[in-house]
Length: 64
Image (cartoon, rainbow, N blue to C red; front, side, top):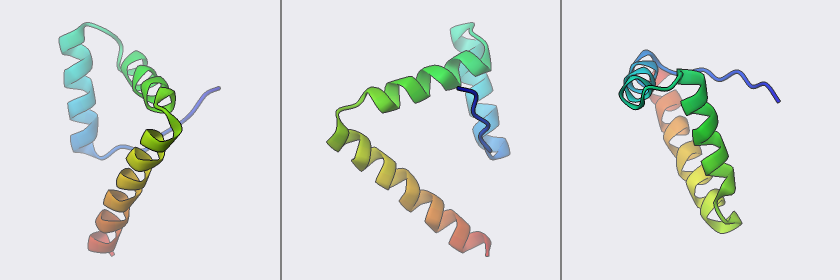
């Protein structure tokens, strides 16, 4: 499955810096992060997803 995601410039910078530090491609780091996230037990995944959605809602509210 191919997936496109939108990151803020700061998130892109952090992702690139982490990938550089680990000496892996940015795409490999992003894919590993997604695999780790969905590997959580369901309750932990839902809590993490809800927290992420909450942060995004707050961000979008500030931007509007």
